[in-house]
Length: 197
Image 1 (cartoon, one colour):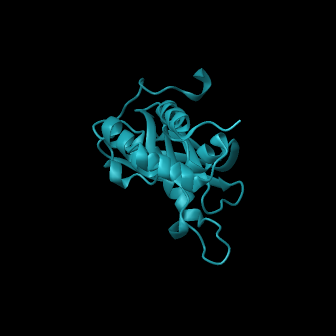
Image 2 (tube, rainbow, N blue to C red):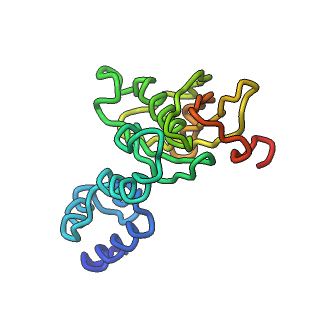
Image 3 (cartoon, helix red, strand yellow):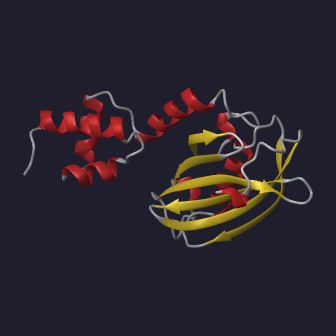
């Protein structure tokens, strides 16, 4: 059953309030209307596009928290962060991220998203990647939304902080990485170790 325009717009606002990172495509499916209709509804309600909504959340919440780099140096948009614990970022794959011939994402963008998140989660003014072990699980296409989840899992025998990152499209893992991070100060005792979760 179709709802009235006024009712749809009311439901649209409450849906975006509850899930600020929902895409126009997902909203179009949910309300059984075209993406263009969703965009017009958003404009009528003065609700910005997804990228601007993410940026607003990121600037408001994480700008003062991230120590190791500025928010603009993170590839993707941080949506959750607990220093020396965990972090989450979103990267929407655009034309500049893909090979023009087949629309498959260039691997260095997935690596950069994961690596910059591993740097951002470190509670230190200086955090550098000393080593990484990465696996690409499947190709990622243009328009897909990659959610990277970083977790600090402990230290290695050289005192490097280990950060594990899994990147997902919907619920499918597309990339995994293990990053060994150098930091300028020791933070022993504050890190959640791998066997404690």
